[in-house]
Image (cartoon, rainbow, N blue to C red; front, side, top):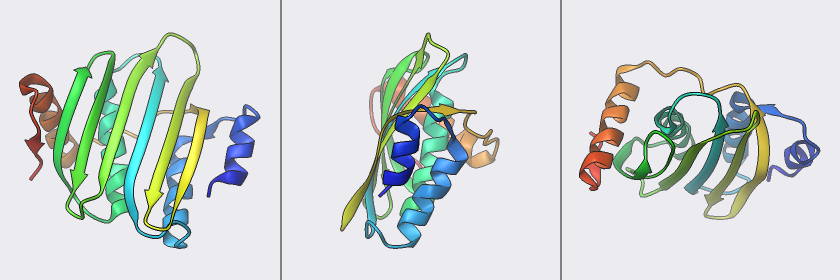
Length: 159
């Protein structure tokens, strides 16, 4: 579903993450994949920071695509270098995010949005810019839930 954009990215052209999110929202709104049921995101971000910010933004993005709030989160890995989070939503949809830091200058993203009638696939592609700062009470709560799941090794309810 992102074939024209994929071609552009494969040629080395970077895209802003906000543009990618808008493209996914259009794909869903136009019914090109049916109802979204799963989102898989793999990020390798250059620069400072931790994967937690990547997880929070992916949770926001998935919530808008799924049209439902997140219910549970489970985190595995090292929240300072490389980690994976599984988030389930009220509709039963799932988000799997793998995020880490890389030593290079280029950040990359790979994405697969699965719907009940098709998929939108983005092969590994460079991106520029960062996730927008989500300094809301909600994002602070999600960061706390991510940290709690990481510390306990168990799924944590997001309510």
